View (cartoon, helix red, strand yellow):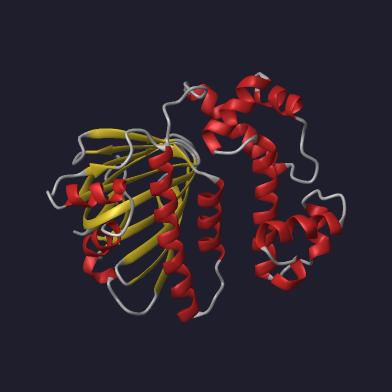
Length: 323
């Protein structure tokens, strides 16, 4: 069976008969569905074409859940944990991989057998998969990390790109959101998703190439508090707290907040906020639902002129020109 997912009581959660070669089709294929099982439910979507597959899942559980996975897919797997805490027991790799909210890693094995444990009642994941021939072709033209990863793949052994999972940078997070919010028609959507899959791979590889040993974020508690600070900041885009206020709300001192935030997310707190506002505005303008004036107000800019100037400096066009 190419893929089968069951719970601890052997209830079937999900099954499909895909093999890696199925994803190597010239036209974009989109599939979506809902799964209900004892103890929870899930919403699944995936897209595949030209040996590339992208997938998104949301899970809601009545209690912490362990899923038993068996898969015969021979693919390189980019795992992005968007919500909740996920612990993967990967038997081929012979190790346990933990991903908190907004963390990611990249792995390869010719098939997978193991467990996914969800410790929280709500979970959301995103993935990109490349068939072995497609990834090897891409890796041969990439940086040293991916080239070395591809060379080790040829030896036929399971691989993990990073010994520890990394936090999602804002560009990575934004690229994933663009995939999930894409409303383009068929042929255009295929080209868009192809570009985004490559962008996500490049951004992920670059994140692992640039990683440094942790200096300020050394405990799980520090990471959880910084993730909380990030989420609180985004939830209050219109009227964000000051740095001392955010530190107090997150339960951190200012030094830990300032240095830990930059270490975890790659930018200082308010540079991250400014970048997030502009990327959010870009997404909303492309979706066509709101005007520049509405977005300037909602995102906390002092005036439409201030918003337009910042937007043009970031993207090279004004909000009006983008629409």
